[in-house]
Length: 150
Image 1: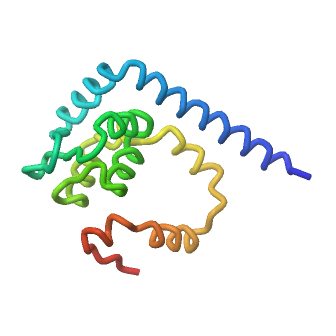
Image 2: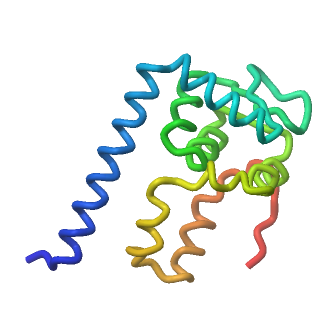
C-alpha cells in the first residue's frame, strides 16, 4: 500500500513531466521564435551557438541536430545544455569556464530548472549517495580529462 507522501510525490512528478513535455511541444511548434529567443538570451550573456566546432571561448558549437539542441535548452536550460554536451550534440572549448561564466553575474536565474524546487523539498537521497551517482554519470569530465577530487 502506498503512503500519502509517495502518492503526492508521484502526482507532482507526473505533473512536472507533463509540463516539461508540453513546454517542449510548444517550443517545437514555434521553433523559429524559440531559436531566436534562446540566441538572444545567450548573446545577452556573452555566448552564442554556432554550427560546427567553436572557434573561440564564447561559442558553443552545435555538431549534430540543431533543432534537438535548441529544444533541449528550451525544455530545461541547464540540463538541456549539459545533456547536449554529454551526448556530443554540442561542444565548447572549455566546459568549466563556460558554465561558470553562464552562472556568474545573475545569469543563473535563467538556468534554474523548473523542477529545482521539487528536488529541494522531496530529495530522498543522502549526500554520499548523490556523490556516488554524480561520479558514475561524470561523462564530461572523463571526456575532457578533468580530475574529480574526492
